[in-house]
Image 1 (cartoon, rainbow, N blue to C red):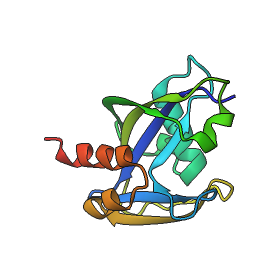
Image 2 (cartoon, rainbow, N blue to C red):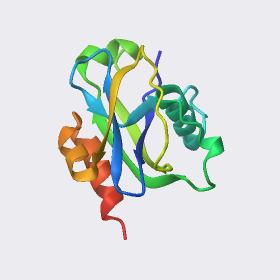
Image 3 (cartoon, rainbow, N blue to C red):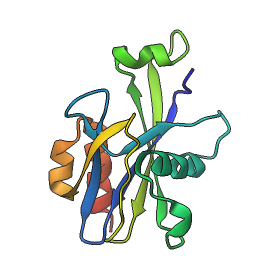
Length: 147
């Protein structure tokens, strides 16, 4: 069973382009990297690093220090009914913690084909409008409105 605690990682380049990936199980469902913690006590940064590696092939260990930043923001949302079977009976809400990851402009992406089928680098405003999830768009907006 999945644990209803997750991370969302907005991956971006210095030119403001944001990486969006399309889910394999839902056509035209574009999002940032997301994923649940593997254990209730898993460090959120560790979960973010793991999910980025699993979903994009980007290994944060090889990036400059402090590339991954905790945005110190979390939201609680209702889990879509079609995905509730992945959680314990009665679990309908998930708490999502936001992170950002600045990557070099020449970063290569290697998708996990069972999870995602396509990716795009988009200007942040365009990425906001393409995200299926409103909160994912809000995370991008928050990142690019920070001082």
